[in-house]
Image (cartoon, rainbow, N blue to C red; front, side):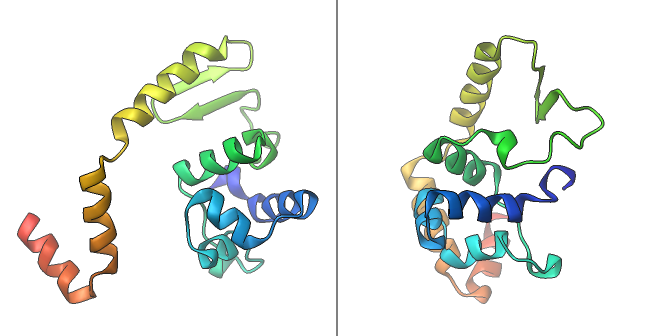
Length: 137
């Protein structure tokens, strides 16, 4: 996670400057407060990172540029942003790249039935999860 080395500090700074609580960020990203707390953990062993959709929610809903949360300036390829299937330089018209990204995100978006199935799966016991995976296997 070379772009995420200081994410925990940057997120904490964002929360502090905007006077937001961990709960506020959790609501924006539609995750549990413990998950946000783990993003900010000072202990690398306890630290986790947001998924791309959670990171994008955070950026869009707080109107924070992605590069304010990630370590782009220390990267050897500074000035170039890479996302799976999408690469562009800062010189490029970002409209096309953002449209491509939006189409890809729409393609991956779950429908209501899939969301409900995932919600139920997450609430299931470990034993039931194993059985479901075997059935789908």
